[in-house]
Amino acid sequence: MYHHHITLENNTIFRRRQTSKFNAGKFLLIFIPVILFAGFLLLHRGKSQKNNVLPEAPPSAEELISQHYYNTLTHKPSDETPFVLTTEESTADEPIISGKSAIVVEKDNGKILFDKNSNEKLKLASLAKIMTAVVVLEHKDLNEKTTVSEKASSIGENIMGISAGETYTLNELMYGLLLNSGNDAAYALAEDVSGDSDTFVSWMNLKAVDLGLNDTHFSDPSGLDDASYTTTRDLVVLTEYAMRFPEFREIVGTFSKELPYSDEHKYLYLENQTNLLTTYPGDIGVKTGYTEEAGLCLVSYAVNGGKEMIGVVLDSQNRKGDMVLLLDHGFAAAGVKIAHPRLTF
Image (cartoon, rainbow, N blue to C red; front, top):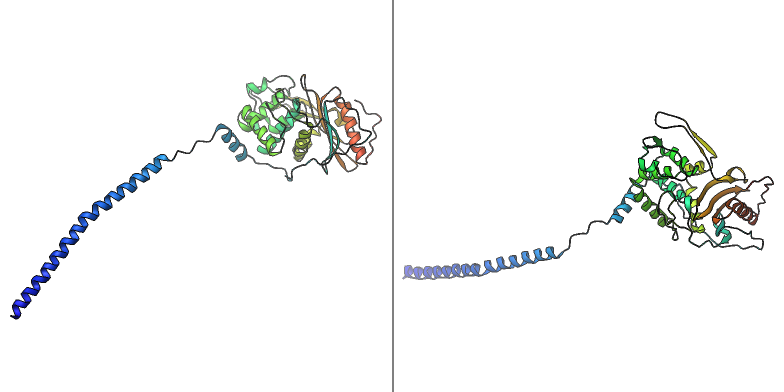
């Protein structure tokens, strides 16, 4: 009896085990396909989502130029505080200026001491070379050398006198750019700094945006292209910024420069065309400009009695005479009397 009981009990256990094994197998047979199917759905969904994501668009030509411009910036002036023009002070004894647009500003406080159509967009001729110089100064060491291309040497009108195949330092070319107003020097510098003149012009316009010159656009590095335009207000801001660079201040304040003959280039004599540099008290230069469409243009910077004045005149009949009147008026408004009985116009 005892043995039979055990046998029955064992049979019962065996049946239970068989039942358990059968149920587990059945569960796996059902569950595994479900898992595989769910995995397939998830994989398919992932691929669909991946396929629906558009590839990132490559940067545009403009974006590449901008990246190149900012990535190659190497020099900045010690003071980067933006120059802001402030209130305008009108007086009863304002001068009569022949220029279509004119302005004189006290540098220390940005105060406009004379204004004639200073917001009018006009052609600027070779005053564009002020921006050319700024872009060069911010991207290159002036001790570097470059070889003049055929294209640069063939640019006409005002020239420095460089020839294709000659090698100059960028500093030498900057003197030719700002003293002789050399269009050939402008293109030689542009090609060296950015690789080609078109890219360089884009850089000039990027810098104009950085400086807040909202009414200025450049079409070439020399100013020969009369599609370029600006305002006298914008030129004051540009000039003030350029004068923060010691190299620019030194060059525009130089009346004449000799480049001795060498194995790399010919002898050249350069002379500053900013005539007031040697005739108006305290004048430290900056730049002349002229094309038939732009008329006579001039930017001057003068320091007297601890006051600094920036004067600009565009489309003038007598730019030197206009500038004398502008500077005299500016200094008088600031309490500084200028004596120049032998001044020649």
